Image: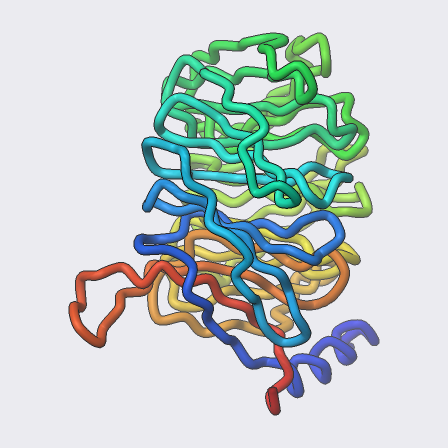
Length: 322
């Protein structure tokens, strides 16, 4: 028997399943993220820039392009409570903090390696950045100085604080989730989550669950309190690259090289919807207040040159008649 929520969301998506794409970059988009108030979407690209859009009714309107990095912008995230500030991680061995009000770079912080992962602590005080050499650096968000640095002996993939800000999670190349106390950074637990490379991790906004995605094409859902796996989602066939919980914590979007994005009901694991794509998906992000999903795929600009990357950002969940 399908839940009431399931019925409601299916009805909603029947009327709102339009996707629209927006020109963002001159090369592929690695990362998309919404500001905490949901007014803006930022994207980071292989073209070494970040773009910011303003959400207006049924469309994204490009507000600005942020230049300064000397290499690909691999990941970005917004300040958890200030809707005007975001940070970018780049292969140029820096992170940059930007303010959309002045459209300027507030700070450039030099780091030791090529940066691939970044996250902001829930209390807004610290930025953690991971590089290709498996070093995670903790940077004071106000002074922009490094507070701590940890070299890990395993391949570090995605990194995240828990919602309470007192633990730090890493997914690793051996399929494990490593949990450290924060700010002490003492190992608390290592969970064997997957038989192969554990790629991504996300916490649900309610703090009840976190999800991991792995190279075995499985998404696993974990109870935060008990650290037990509650259920697995197995509709994808390729390594899971990206995950996002909806604002109410009741839907989980996951994507890979499969040509669709899976939208699951968290409590049952049932497929709520799938978003068709023409190419692999790099990044997904639910809007913080409504059922709108931003995403970016490895699309080619077929009109003139089938090898040219389209660099577009997409939005799913728009009204069919829009």
